Length: 444
Image 1 (cartoon, rainbow, N blue to C red):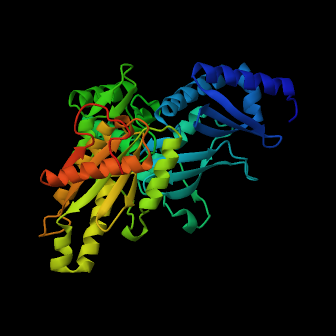
Image 2: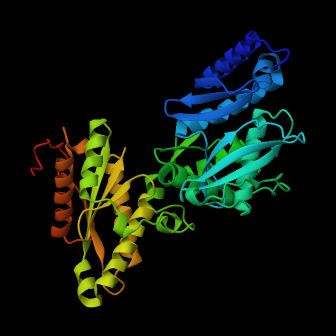
Image 3: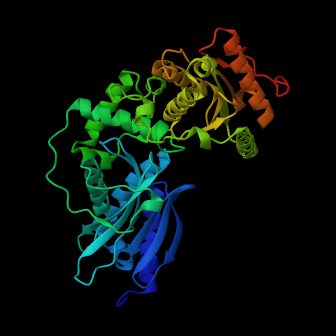
């Protein structure tokens, strides 16, 4: 690059590192792609984001206050999402949770126009959209925020089509400039957005995420409101026991009340929101469950195992026939998958016996999820005139010292049978006493 020296490039990278450090981020990886572009990975631990930067931007960074402000603003935004588990996860008003992967800035075309390439992943459905969008000459980090929000608005307007990865036609969809800004949104819509975002990104749609960044300035611009309005809406939701807000006021988790309700009131049940429709025939079996338990336990991860047995299911087969029984099972599988989302895995352990593996769940947190499963199945009436319900047992690693897969399986199974003995259609946690049991207690 004419006029650019290695010292100038190094000075730019050093300034970027200092900016990253102020945002509590790291420059995890860097490598030149060619004489024009540099590939950079920033973030923390496993939560990271990739950026492709022009060398001219890197060289000019230390000398330009405009570039410095843009970088600081961008890194502050990324740091908030890194803390929540994924710097590229966003929620759309249309109810879709997405993850973006951006190649930026794009090379100029022969005509002189620049097109940014963005791959958008629908977190719930596992589908992808490959898009290009025009950018001004010499794009800044601030423009990346603008482009992300433009893409979100295009998704809301159904102007972007998603495909299953193996079915994508491999041609890019052109997303042009956004239309006029929407008028100021009512408080109820802002609250609805925050609740849905907390439920989908904080509980259901994005694996490993426990909290959301409620003060996200990118969300504020997307909604055409201020960050202050976002914070005030969150405080109202906390007062209604729907969000749990951290002392800093910038981050929140979905409350147990919100999770138990199956999502925000008026947005439908969790089963209706989930786009994942697993097939009964392809559910992993007991052997896979034990192997998955073994792998998680060997890593030292906390987990909970939920064992589900259907009540009165035999009567469906006896009175309606096995095809009706299979349809009943399919409905129940979809209901359970909708409640659990991507926070756990569903297994079939027998004819009408299922297990739900919940990594990073305490026994108490798993009890809330199990109660939602129980209530969702009961309300859905999957057996129609036959009252099919669930008897559920739970055991977590926080209840057993030195747990093995077999011990956890036996303990949750025993807890399920206790639910059966106590009248069915209920949830029982092992052990029933408050004391912490030894690993030898549930023999088997």
